[in-house]
Length: 397
Image (cartoon, rainbow, N blue to C red):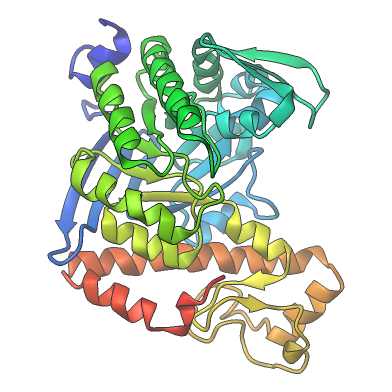
């Protein structure tokens, strides 16, 4: 399996940037003594990322309603963008013509792009699956028929130019019959090997994705296949938060991460973003999270807070001259915006209401991960989790 990409990760030709440093590495700087939580630093060509970390989702090369300057101001270290949507509009060739995704969206920090597989399989009856790839109709765009092989998916990923990209995989929903999940594991494993062989961009990391539904044995089978087909520098964990309860998710997620996943590589739980699940996820050894939840719920008029989930549509906020969350230090909570004003904006469907709540919600998760990291470094993450679960903030549904 000799290739430029494999040589790169094995320390061969092309393994370092011009200044001699590795393009990509992960260092664990602290481990909590009472949980499986760890604090680390993810080194990428566009900067270092302290972990654990939450990644705001900029689906179409934008985090909805927020300037990249705002994202930087509130402490964003890495963004996520969506390969499916960018492949449809404006197209990977145009992004490459503009330099790459960093230049195109005016963001100089690290970027991760998913494979777009989840969005493709969400098209339901418009999807036809084969061993070779997936055919779909882009019904949410112009309706054209598209055929993606793992090789084509990697071509798109390399044109977009993110620091981290994900393999093409099949994500089964919940509940799904075991034979269907087994087939998804088999297909995702075959595609992972083909993505590994097709990916040749040395300054870009390719992560494998562990699938297997809620069955631990299938998860372990998926992980074994990934370890056999390539030395992936990190792993995504897909197929969770697809309809199951969080208690059901943690039944298999906990042993998978804490007992079986490689220790020296970052672990990325895909598509999970409510605060309590982040706190619990870190405790079992997750390093990276992403989700549209903070911005989507903001557009619905709701906000995370130290007092639990707040619905700014509720009339109880009409005359409230206090800040959104007195315990929060984001620009919204410290900038003089009252709950009464935010209630007014939400009720009137003013776009600035969504912008302010999105700013707060993303900051809330970023700050939560900053505090979690500090607790890990100080060896008190077990107490951090207990305090969180006993607090009103844990009522985040």
